[in-house]
Image (tube, helix red, strand yellow):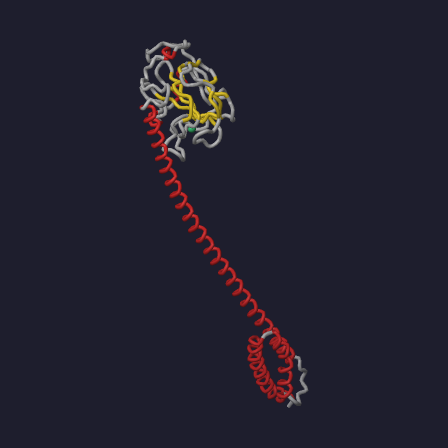
Length: 321
Ligand SMILES: [Zn+2]
């Protein structure tokens, strides 16, 4: 009897429990959607349902709290899961937004850089063109002045005998066209430090037409060799105050951008004699000596015919650094 009752009751209880489980599951889903607040009230609903389903039941109600607990835990878990999913989605969105922002910033930066680079190139090309035109005009003007005899002492005869100037030169060999064997020169700037070499590409010309000696403003400039000063003055162009000295072999050394000159056109100078002082007159960016060499038969100042002074200096025992 008792066993039958148990047997009969067992399915009844089982059905009730199953119903409760189904109810709880549905509730759990609802709670999961409703959130944690709703989850807090679910045990009450579960207990009320359990109470009405088994009004006269004397069985211990250990199972009911378990279901409620499971449901609550399930609800909590699902709510937590939903919250976690939402948080992850939020993080992902934030990451994407950051990525997009970074990408657009990067794109904008690259575009701006490209614009700047091309603008810079255009400006530089234009500046080089203008500088080239100015240089050509300056050379043409100087050439015209020399041809018209306006530049005193700048004789068009490259083989002129320096002794004709009236002063004795040491050493001088007249119009032989070569320096006496063993002729020794001096550095135009005693330290001999060269900044820009001949042929170096500059921003103002297609190539550098001389050697730039580094020197402080006012540093004495020496004539590399003895000779006659064929020009000492300022013709209003890139060279500023400059001195040109023609040597015994017909070559001319030219010293530009002087702050002041120490000789006059027609003077004769000895090797190492101070002919002027470092400055930045004419087209010069900072004080330095721009030193040029013109071969025999070439008028000084025709920068297109200037040659590298380094081998010449070496030939007279002068080494630069
Ligand atoms: Zn220079």
